[in-house]
Length: 237
Image: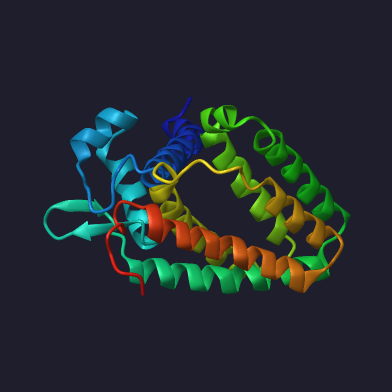
């Protein structure tokens, strides 16, 4: 095999590795494994992800471009800090984009969209309807299914830019939500809320679905401010 042919065959594998590392690093930042403001040391990251400096630098550069990490002058990279002002900025924009996207999806959604909403809700329901202890044990699975359901709701909006910007904001909001998740009391779950959103979407009741999404996101903001360790003890705005 020629060097050129070998290089072409290796390229997809290298891309896959880079994407895998990016996904793992993002998940670890969202999940709080790397706390807000924490330095991201290459030696520790190499040991954790078993990849070279070049792959890590590529992943970190991408995460810096979307605001998840910051370049720490002369010292590498650091997880982006959190603040109440940023939380309110992110959440207000996400609410606006989420509502625009759900209204457009309800207007434009076809049978395939309806099926995606039903399927992702069914998978989410399978966890949310379980006893509290089982829900807690399957938390990471719930996070992924919750993301899939909310993406399905807005997936027929018809604007790739709206979906792209909404996706970036969703990730930042998810980081804030997960900061408070482990510190707030375990509630009864969000099954009724998600079912109400699903029904409003499928029955093409756009304003109601948009309002339900707004309420759910505002509930998240209120809980972050109340329970996230980074915000406890601060006066409410």
